[in-house]
Length: 308
Image 1 (cartoon, rainbow, N blue to C red):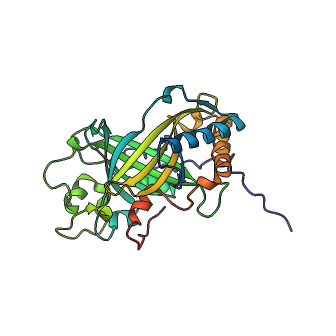
Image 2: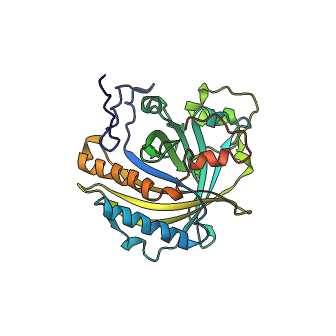
Image 3: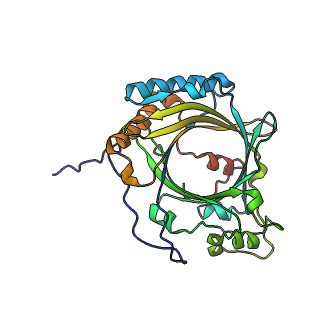
């Protein structure tokens, strides 16, 4: 009997998108970011020392894998604080259909440093399906499209990865139309991608599980995978505001590129090798089968049927 040859996740490339276009004739957006995420347990994140401890682990694995790790810009940096809110219907209709609506604001010295940022995304394991959802909003102001491949560990074991494709649009809250910003009918006018959902007259979105998330974000440094491919790395703790109940941690690094072919095979393979080896060496830190957003949605039990 012939043995099936297993694919090596370190050398496997994501398939190209099939050609297509949106209703106005614009070509489909293509992936221009790779964000690698490790969801972490919160046990060690009781003080800044926990962030420093994980940074040492990152440095150790980077050295083993031949990955550069420059921490000079992050030395002395204090953790940043951001507030994150998720909005959805009572039955989680957005999340159950792979949509996420989020508002985020950054604080400095206890006060808002910027105006709130709105993010609307469609996140799905099928790249083509994610690309074909036109997330562009109906807005008079500017907005930014970000189409990411998000790498996460396998749901049930360490040593590999799975991909979610996150098709995002983001813009300052001031660019959103005035008036009722929580009515589903009004939101579907701003985000036409939502019009395929069942909309009930007078229905509104509200804060998911009545939870304000406080994010404590620590920059760690810049990873260098060679061939001009670099990624800023950070570690974060999500906790509830008020009770300071720890929810989940995350280590993440993100690579940006204009075209897929711009990422050299050696750099891509080194990036995957580092991601897999960090899981193995830091196995005690890893929280399998979770995402940060999923943890917020599951706070009250009865998890929604997400596509994550």
